Length: 157
Image (tube, rainbow, N blue to C red; front, side, top):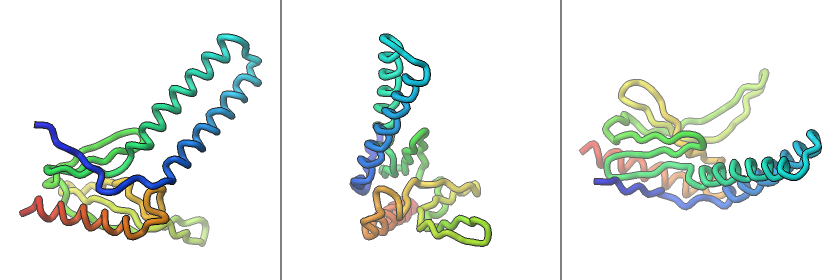
């Protein structure tokens, strides 16, 4: 029987901004490539089609990114790879405050949701409080975190 996976939040509007940004960047790359190599005819078509295909695949992955819950587990869709974990493989779901050190300065990057597995490894969930889905919606970030914790606790019973 197939598992039904649902994302417990709606994607933020920032995803569309990222997709448009990538389209502009790839268009600039196409223009620069055509100019640099003085392409004509089929060369222009080939570059345009290859970069358009890369954009379509990338845009699809960006739209699918996130955490999906099911009755038996949690599925994490990243930009490049996806992974599925059973609720029973997860020891703990926790918030982690991310900071980056630059010289003697520490730059606060916000909270992210991490999964601690029973084997001692940690899995990133792609859920970031200052990311494109939650930056303007901190209450949604907290609600998703609570939803993951409650589903994990329910599966442990």
